[in-house]
Length: 186
Image (cartoon, rainbow, N blue to C red; front, side, top):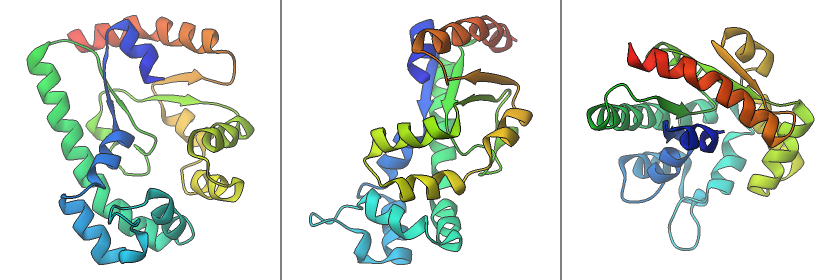
């Protein structure tokens, strides 16, 4: 979704990418994760293996909450740094934070508007499988750990249905973008 908005001129901040960077050493998040989840989440090179970590936390809601309490504040701080930098570089530009867990993290008030991109549940599982190579059970567990998409759609300011073709999704992004530009200019 972010690539559609980037092509339209928006600056996109990807929360997943920030989260992945925080798992690399040296980082305070790396040290906290090892302290809380042990060395069994490491690969042979001593880096955090996201698949191993995911297998641990998506089976246990309390451990997932712990991981989120470590990562979310650091991800949000980095998002804010990047947004401030982008505003300095180009005041009035559209800045989009691409993040799946805005509501789950309780940070929706940090954003002027929320856009939810969604697809049918079957498609969501298939796309997650294709993107990550995880098992169907792992994909279902990850989705189950999130707020139901119907609730996200209800709370959102803008909604894009990604269940159709890429062209249909792109057209929806193009239709929303002028509204985002007007809001950014305020």
